[in-house]
Image (cartoon, rainbow, N blue to C red; front, side, top):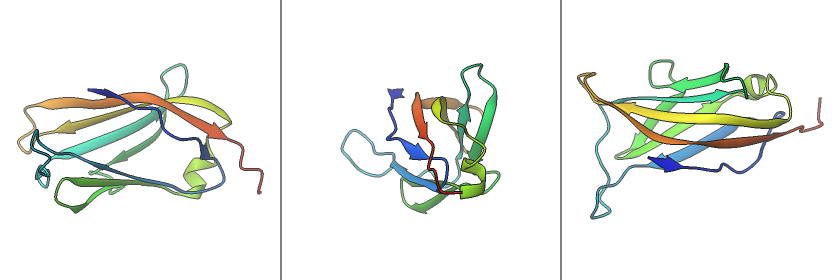
Length: 113
């Protein structure tokens, strides 16, 4: 598991990010049949945003690469501050879930209405 500190994001813009899973030899891992969940929670652990393969907010644009996307309207629901994040992946038959990362996500007030 990795501890990730995301760059600050605006609550007045979309947030789109990418990640990649590779093996020890730096070869991309085929995650096509796996499911992923990225959750953003407030300081009381209440979920505020969720991207997943099930809701279509996480996609696999290339072998080993995953992309998440939150719209501007979704991001507007986050006030300025630091939120918690967690990312999991579940294998294709649903028998094993791995926590890939946890870490803070700073949100800044983007000012623009």
